[in-house]
Length: 165
Image (cartoon, rainbow, N blue to C red; front, side):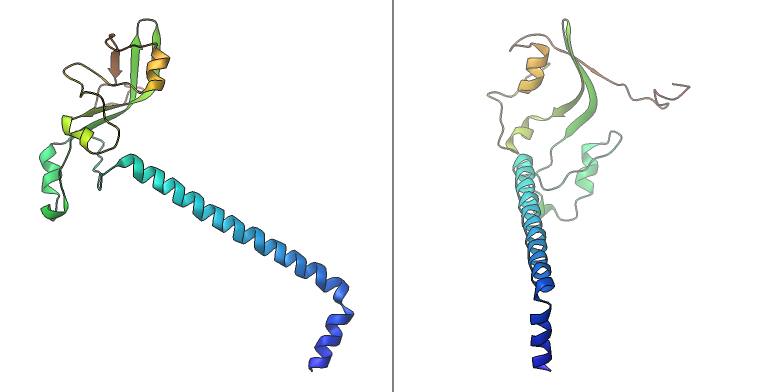
């Protein structure tokens, strides 16, 4: 039986060598793609975890709710270091004189929010002050101390894009 297998391999070597080479190349491509995919996934995960800082859990709701609700949902107070309030508006408009930026995200945070991550302002904003990222400041041609108008959509029972809205 062994001699039959050897004679068959020698007889069809012209076909078997290219097939073996093709299988080797295909295997190398698939393994390389898996390694690159895992590396990319790990890099993206590291970037995402670095950006969120020390945040462990987030409660997001489509409507306003009391900060006490989040504290009532805790099962074990020993696992949670602190709770921070945050208002997140996805569609906001910023204006400065003739310049306008739309479809920007607006965050309303408490003073303790800045202890969560690695990015901290030189000083926390005070009453009626905002912090703009560099790309938004460039788009608005804004400098420190200038007046910026922020517009947000009001919450209504009837959506604005419906015929009755």
